[in-house]
Image 1 (cartoon, rainbow over the protein chains, first blue to last red):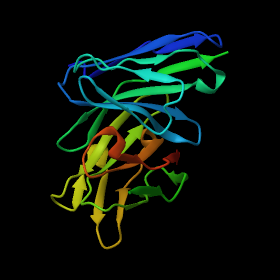
Image 2: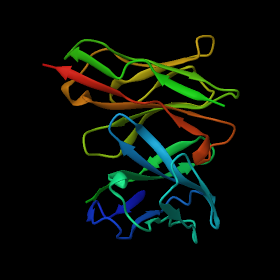
Image 3: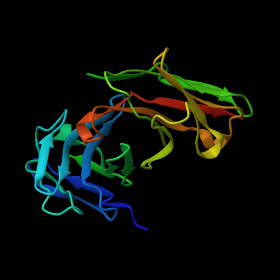
Image 4: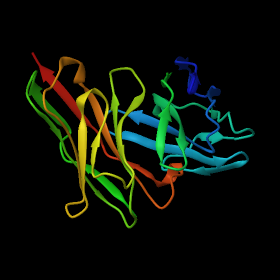
Length: 112
Length: 115
Protein backbone atom coordinates (compact mmCIF):
# COMPACT_ATOMS: atom_id res chain seq x y z
CA UNK A 1 0.00 0.00 0.00
CA UNK A 2 2.51 2.61 -1.23
CA UNK A 3 0.32 5.76 -1.45
CA UNK A 4 2.56 8.66 -2.53
CA UNK A 5 6.23 7.97 -3.15
CA UNK A 6 8.77 10.77 -3.42
CA UNK A 7 12.41 10.48 -4.39
CA UNK A 8 15.07 11.39 -3.48
CA UNK A 9 14.67 11.99 0.25
CA UNK A 10 17.80 14.13 0.40
CA UNK A 11 19.74 16.02 -2.26
CA UNK A 12 22.55 18.56 -2.28
CA UNK A 13 23.00 20.68 -5.39
CA UNK A 14 25.34 23.41 -6.47
CA UNK A 15 23.93 26.69 -7.75
CA UNK A 16 22.99 26.36 -11.39
CA UNK A 17 22.57 22.59 -11.41
CA UNK A 18 19.31 21.02 -12.49
CA UNK A 19 17.42 18.12 -10.99
CA UNK A 20 14.05 16.43 -10.91
CA UNK A 21 12.09 15.43 -7.83
CA UNK A 22 10.01 12.40 -8.60
CA UNK A 23 6.50 11.80 -7.29
CA UNK A 24 4.28 8.82 -7.94
CA UNK A 25 0.90 7.83 -6.52
CA UNK A 26 -1.00 4.57 -6.83
CA UNK A 27 -4.46 5.76 -5.74
CA UNK A 28 -5.65 6.87 -9.19
CA UNK A 29 -6.18 10.44 -7.95
CA UNK A 30 -6.68 13.05 -10.64
CA UNK A 31 -5.47 15.94 -8.48
CA UNK A 32 -1.85 16.33 -7.41
CA UNK A 33 0.21 19.18 -5.98
CA UNK A 34 3.75 20.18 -5.06
CA UNK A 35 4.49 22.25 -1.95
CA UNK A 36 7.57 23.69 -0.38
CA UNK A 37 7.91 24.08 3.37
CA UNK A 38 10.20 26.68 4.88
CA UNK A 39 10.59 27.64 8.57
CA UNK A 40 7.90 30.10 9.60
CA UNK A 41 6.27 30.02 6.14
CA UNK A 42 4.00 27.00 6.39
CA UNK A 43 3.35 25.09 3.17
CA UNK A 44 3.27 27.02 -0.09
CA UNK A 45 1.84 25.66 -3.32
CA UNK A 46 4.32 25.51 -6.20
CA UNK A 47 2.36 23.82 -8.99
CA UNK A 48 -0.70 21.67 -9.18
CA UNK A 49 -2.46 19.38 -11.63
CA UNK A 50 -6.08 18.38 -12.10
CA UNK A 51 -5.36 15.50 -14.45
CA UNK A 52 -2.99 14.05 -16.99
CA UNK A 53 -1.84 16.76 -19.37
CA UNK A 54 -3.15 19.61 -17.18
CA UNK A 55 -0.94 21.65 -14.87
CA UNK A 56 -1.05 25.16 -13.47
CA UNK A 57 0.96 27.50 -11.30
CA UNK A 58 0.50 27.89 -7.61
CA UNK A 59 1.70 30.56 -5.23
CA UNK A 60 5.46 30.22 -5.79
CA UNK A 61 6.07 28.71 -9.27
CA UNK A 62 9.19 30.64 -10.35
CA UNK A 63 12.19 28.41 -10.97
CA UNK A 64 10.14 25.21 -11.15
CA UNK A 65 8.55 23.24 -13.98
CA UNK A 66 6.14 20.34 -13.85
CA UNK A 67 4.54 17.92 -16.25
CA UNK A 68 1.80 15.32 -15.89
CA UNK A 69 2.04 12.77 -18.67
CA UNK A 70 0.28 10.07 -16.66
CA UNK A 71 -2.15 10.03 -13.76
CA UNK A 72 0.44 8.36 -11.56
CA UNK A 73 3.47 10.62 -12.00
CA UNK A 74 3.99 14.31 -11.28
CA UNK A 75 7.70 15.24 -11.39
CA UNK A 76 9.01 18.64 -10.28
CA UNK A 77 11.99 20.06 -12.17
CA UNK A 78 14.46 22.66 -11.00
CA UNK A 79 16.09 23.97 -14.16
CA UNK A 80 18.85 26.07 -12.57
CA UNK A 81 18.97 25.67 -8.81
CA UNK A 82 19.39 28.71 -6.57
CA UNK A 83 20.12 28.89 -2.83
CA UNK A 84 16.60 30.30 -2.33
CA UNK A 85 15.27 26.91 -3.39
CA UNK A 86 16.78 25.24 -0.34
CA UNK A 87 13.69 23.78 1.27
CA UNK A 88 11.70 20.68 2.05
CA UNK A 89 9.43 19.67 -0.80
CA UNK A 90 6.24 17.69 -0.47
CA UNK A 91 4.20 16.05 -3.16
CA UNK A 92 0.56 15.30 -2.45
CA UNK A 93 -2.29 13.62 -4.24
CA UNK A 94 -5.83 14.73 -3.48
CA UNK A 95 -9.04 12.77 -3.22
CA UNK A 96 -11.17 14.99 -5.44
CA UNK A 97 -14.47 14.16 -3.71
CA UNK A 98 -13.37 15.51 -0.31
CA UNK A 99 -10.11 17.45 -0.71
CA UNK A 100 -8.21 15.07 1.55
CA UNK A 101 -4.47 15.28 0.87
CA UNK A 102 -2.15 12.30 0.83
CA UNK A 103 1.45 13.39 1.28
CA UNK A 104 4.75 11.88 0.37
CA UNK A 105 7.46 11.79 3.02
CA UNK A 106 9.23 14.83 1.64
CA UNK A 107 12.47 15.67 -0.14
CA UNK A 108 15.02 17.82 1.65
CA UNK A 109 16.95 19.88 -0.88
CA UNK A 110 20.02 21.98 -0.14
CA UNK A 111 21.43 24.32 -2.77
CA UNK A 112 24.95 25.57 -2.09
CA UNK B 1 -11.50 33.93 -1.65
CA UNK B 2 -10.81 31.94 1.46
CA UNK B 3 -8.36 32.05 4.31
CA UNK B 4 -7.30 30.10 7.36
CA UNK B 5 -5.87 31.55 10.55
CA UNK B 6 -4.28 29.42 13.20
CA UNK B 7 -4.39 31.72 16.16
CA UNK B 8 -1.34 30.38 17.98
CA UNK B 9 1.99 29.64 16.36
CA UNK B 10 3.17 27.79 19.49
CA UNK B 11 1.25 26.03 22.25
CA UNK B 12 2.87 24.45 25.29
CA UNK B 13 1.03 22.06 27.61
CA UNK B 14 1.98 19.61 30.32
CA UNK B 15 1.51 15.92 29.75
CA UNK B 16 -1.95 14.84 30.87
CA UNK B 17 -3.54 18.29 30.47
CA UNK B 18 -6.00 19.29 27.74
CA UNK B 19 -4.94 20.51 24.32
CA UNK B 20 -6.65 23.29 22.37
CA UNK B 21 -5.36 24.37 18.97
CA UNK B 22 -7.41 27.14 17.41
CA UNK B 23 -8.36 27.55 13.75
CA UNK B 24 -10.61 30.18 12.21
CA UNK B 25 -11.51 30.22 8.55
CA UNK B 26 -13.31 32.29 5.99
CA UNK B 27 -14.88 30.87 2.87
CA UNK B 28 -17.52 31.80 0.35
CA UNK B 29 -18.49 28.16 0.04
CA UNK B 30 -19.57 25.37 2.31
CA UNK B 31 -16.06 24.21 3.02
CA UNK B 32 -14.47 20.97 3.95
CA UNK B 33 -12.02 21.38 6.82
CA UNK B 34 -9.07 19.27 7.83
CA UNK B 35 -6.43 18.98 10.52
CA UNK B 36 -3.06 17.44 9.64
CA UNK B 37 -0.19 16.57 11.95
CA UNK B 38 3.50 16.65 11.07
CA UNK B 39 6.02 15.00 13.34
CA UNK B 40 9.64 16.13 13.04
CA UNK B 41 11.24 15.25 9.72
CA UNK B 42 8.09 13.50 8.55
CA UNK B 43 5.33 14.12 6.04
CA UNK B 44 1.85 15.37 6.95
CA UNK B 45 -0.75 12.91 8.14
CA UNK B 46 -4.50 13.42 8.29
CA UNK B 47 -5.85 13.73 11.85
CA UNK B 48 -9.49 14.37 11.03
CA UNK B 49 -11.83 15.96 8.50
CA UNK B 50 -15.17 17.72 8.36
CA UNK B 51 -17.09 17.29 5.10
CA UNK B 52 -20.60 18.58 5.98
CA UNK B 53 -21.75 15.60 8.02
CA UNK B 54 -21.61 15.65 11.84
CA UNK B 55 -20.20 18.90 13.22
CA UNK B 56 -18.24 17.11 15.96
CA UNK B 57 -15.54 15.11 14.25
CA UNK B 58 -13.42 12.47 15.91
CA UNK B 59 -9.96 11.73 14.62
CA UNK B 60 -7.01 9.54 15.37
CA UNK B 61 -5.10 9.45 18.65
CA UNK B 62 -7.97 10.89 20.71
CA UNK B 63 -8.21 14.21 18.87
CA UNK B 64 -11.51 15.79 17.92
CA UNK B 65 -12.70 19.05 16.40
CA UNK B 66 -16.00 20.87 16.25
CA UNK B 67 -17.17 22.77 13.19
CA UNK B 68 -18.92 25.96 14.32
CA UNK B 69 -20.32 27.78 11.33
CA UNK B 70 -21.54 30.78 13.34
CA UNK B 71 -18.05 31.32 14.72
CA UNK B 72 -16.25 30.19 11.53
CA UNK B 73 -14.04 28.01 13.71
CA UNK B 74 -12.70 24.48 13.64
CA UNK B 75 -10.68 24.15 16.85
CA UNK B 76 -8.77 20.95 17.58
CA UNK B 77 -8.94 19.46 21.07
CA UNK B 78 -7.69 16.51 23.05
CA UNK B 79 -8.60 15.82 26.68
CA UNK B 80 -5.17 14.66 27.79
CA UNK B 81 -1.88 15.40 26.04
CA UNK B 82 0.73 12.73 25.54
CA UNK B 83 4.41 13.26 24.89
CA UNK B 84 3.96 11.72 21.44
CA UNK B 85 1.54 14.54 20.51
CA UNK B 86 4.44 16.99 20.25
CA UNK B 87 4.36 17.98 16.58
CA UNK B 88 3.21 20.70 14.20
CA UNK B 89 -0.47 20.88 13.34
CA UNK B 90 -2.01 22.41 10.22
CA UNK B 91 -5.60 23.44 9.62
CA UNK B 92 -6.70 23.30 5.97
CA UNK B 93 -9.86 24.53 4.25
CA UNK B 94 -11.10 23.56 0.81
CA UNK B 95 -12.85 25.87 -1.63
CA UNK B 96 -15.24 25.58 -4.53
CA UNK B 97 -13.50 22.45 -5.69
CA UNK B 98 -10.75 20.41 -4.18
CA UNK B 99 -7.97 21.04 -6.67
CA UNK B 100 -4.62 22.05 -5.25
CA UNK B 101 -5.18 25.76 -5.73
CA UNK B 102 -8.39 25.62 -3.70
CA UNK B 103 -6.86 24.12 -0.57
CA UNK B 104 -5.67 26.79 1.85
CA UNK B 105 -3.26 26.02 4.69
CA UNK B 106 -3.02 27.76 8.01
CA UNK B 107 0.42 28.79 9.14
CA UNK B 108 0.74 25.89 11.55
CA UNK B 109 0.81 25.49 15.34
CA UNK B 110 3.74 23.85 17.03
CA UNK B 111 2.58 21.85 20.04
CA UNK B 112 5.09 21.25 22.80
CA UNK B 113 4.33 18.77 25.57
CA UNK B 114 6.21 19.06 28.85
CA UNK B 115 6.72 16.03 31.08
